[in-house]
Image (tube, rainbow over the protein chains, first blue to last red):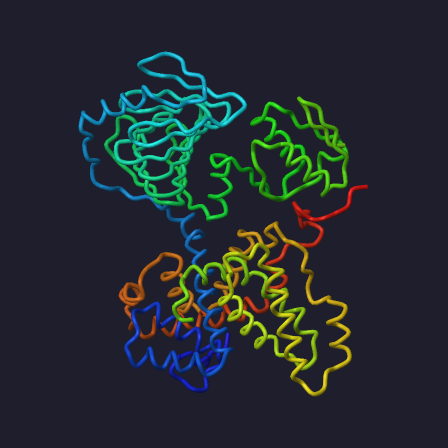
Length: 311
Length: 191
């Protein structure tokens, strides 16, 4: 970098890039005075390249915001707020009433604490008084009057004040979209939008996850928190929107994902199993994916009502 | 134009900026063409267009640049023969559909990380406080016990530096050809 780089927007001898950077930094500092506004306008109108340099500098400024994700992985985006407001009891009964009229596709077992299980499909959004819960394939959810528990698998919660989710020994209060996954040894929660408050069972210490933050808890180990980039969030949330996003993934792995979500099974010949693809596909349309893959890989496709074979 | 929103800047940052180095490399092969000028003009054209409807930003960026080069040669009295041949061969950059993210977000992060590491120490500290930790310029000044004016100047300096790094980012930002995934909707004929 040039040591003597003069980047003041007011300097006439600055290059378009230097002046554009100066104005971008100045605008970041605060609103422009009338004089500055006029000077900027004049400079922009002098030459189309000035406008271009200014647009580009602003784009670079935005791109550099990615550094926040990098920083976030070192310093967790987690805060310790004050205690949570107590939920009025009346709202619990409202939740109970709503739970009684669920439009659930998954199988329901029991009454007071309803258990929902999914097999090879994503559930319809399960409505509660405080939001909706969408259950991923091969997952189990227990819905109660005061709270809901993800027993295993994965779910996407769209919650507002009053929504309480449990998984493992954690209690979540989401205000926004929360992605939750639970295995016998680990619980992972990702705040897709809004904020999520959480605490351990028998603990008064509340944490807050902000949008884009992901927390992983394994047993009694300290929580691991990291910030996800928008692309990662999109990819992780894709299933709840009925999409499958793959990035340079093998055909074998893509086929196994499709097969988890669909009755019609996709088989890939060994010769194609290691070929890699990137793209966004509809999760419940393996036929569309098979047709696309056939064209891309120059393969053949054999279709039967129950199976799709790429070879 | 000043009023065009942050959304446009974000779109340019996400879909155009990462391809810039690659497209500049193509532009450098044309005689009598100043890549900076073409790129700057291209940003204006793209910002004024219906950018949100563009499905293949990279191909769009390429075609805008190509048209600007053509315009330049139309206005010029003498057009180098080699440049005409280049235009006809259309080898500036491929305009194939690019549904895949040629530039991976992680790679861009690494690129930024490396670029920031090259900044002078104080400039780097200020930039990290402002852009990575999200402090305001005023807070940065207070934390480092310096004037707000210095913070602003150093941020501008860092931006100029990043601007140059993006101009030369060809190798850093694109996936190696052999590792590049096949396109999900490329039109390859069936055997």
